[in-house]
Length: 125
Image 1 (cartoon, rainbow, N blue to C red):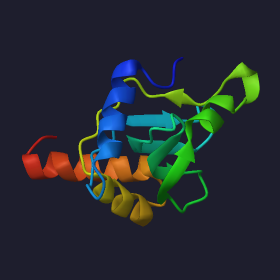
Image 2: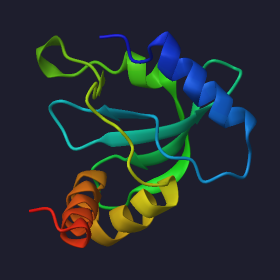
Image 3: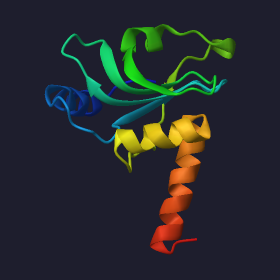
Image 4: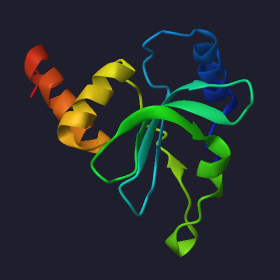
């Protein structure tokens, strides 16, 4: 699977040109056989450096930069690699995901908390 489509690349690059903005994540990458997850909001003109929330599965998600080339080069068991979640649509600003991830200990835990809270606040079950 292509990690970044041209449309996603363009959206990330546009966000990268707007500094000091709390963007909504554009793309979610994940390890299909592990706990690592990345939410990216920005892409640098170097065509490698992404910015967002990284969770390597050790209970301490953190904001920072990570390499698209490194994500693409990861080789996992069964011939798998890091994948992009094609169904992901960011619903909250990155700071909201980051705070929830710190509390939950993971990005996936944060998503569960945030969507549960959203459903209860909007009256959805």
